[in-house]
Length: 105
Ligand code: FES
Image (cartoon, rainbow, N blue to C red; front, side, top):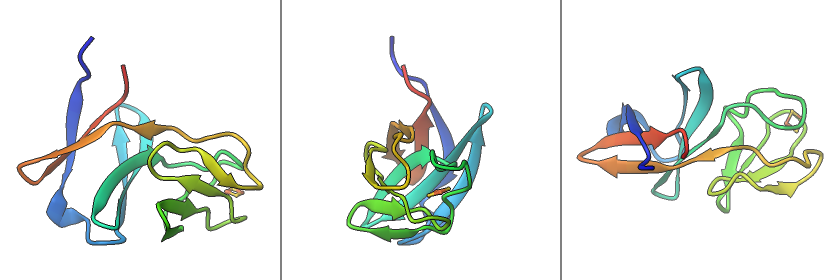
C-alpha cells in the first residue's frame, strides 16, 4: 500500500528550531525543524500526556518541557526517563516548499 501524504505546512512557516502543532485527521502532531531537517512526532509526551511543544531541541532529540524525558525526533524512541514508552513519529517529505506528512501504512 502506498502511503498517503498530506500537505500540512510550508517550509516558510518553520524557522530553524521552530515547532508547530497540527491536527491531521484527528492525530495531534508536532512539526519540528531541527538542524535543517523537518520531523513530525506525536504532540503528546508518553509520560504524562502533556504537550511536547516548546521542548528544547538538542542532538536530534526533543526534551519534554514538563519532566525532562527525551525523545529521538527521527523515530520517537526514548533517550531519557521518566518516559519509557516511545512516541509516534510520522513519515515526512518536503516537496516544492510544502511539508507533507503521512499517518503511516
Ligand atoms: S509529561 Fe513529558 S516527561 Fe512527564
